Image 1 (cartoon, rainbow, N blue to C red):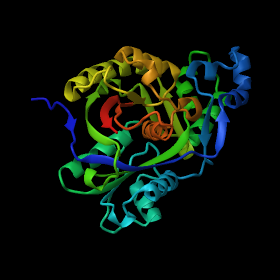
Image 2: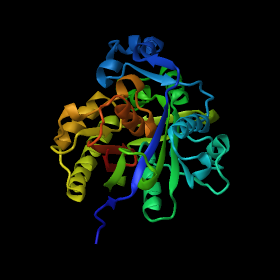
Image 3: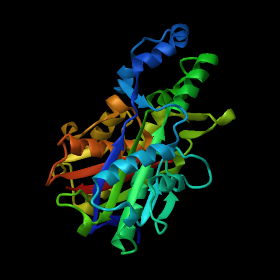
Length: 349
């Protein structure tokens, strides 16, 4: 029998920490750098913000390591936590970006944070869905009694990808059609996030509780967005954006039906939705497909862009800080990552 989904009774997000890089790059400034291409192809200025809704995104310097960003977010979460760093049973690093192939980036974060020698460390990689995967892994370990507390972190710095994309677009002989696979790269940002996840008995009152969720996968779409290292260690990514969006909406639609059946939730009794932050069109199409009132959405893509695995958990933290998520709220986390895989989690505050 096919499993209905995940269910948790004893798992809470005890503390959150976020880090936003200091330097803002506006869509206008990116288009200014692409002016020779825009003039040659007669592209109207302002189209990047108009099409995506992204005014700016933030970056560290190109040499900022994912482990450094993740450790900063980890420190921020631990500073807000009632749990000591010595009590962490597991550390999971969930970023698209990693320091290197070996060892796990979690090893560098563990060292930077000075966690206990008994703390298990590992990386989880699943494109933009990685943080939610890490979250459910440690939730399952807590629920089963294997561990009591975990630190889930991610740090993404899309600047090397954006810099590489700008250089490629300015030196290549592109047409309006052939630049399309590079467009998504111009929406990428940077940031870091960390959650302390604990047994509910160790969490403060009104801590967000993870109730359960479902996963839906369509690996036939795995070729629609692919990223890798280019010559010289630079990053490359090519995205068939229109096809990926349509495939993603189908996956999300199937997942949403199962999510509602599994948790007994529906668009009427959900107070807030937090989606992966891609851009205006993706957000609008997703909410329309799932028949969710757009007033229940909370966005950060307008000022942060797409921050990979960091986007959704950081947006949830921002929503709580802004008072958009409050006590007695039901929150649906709607995550998706190229591959193509969607995860939908229910959180109650």
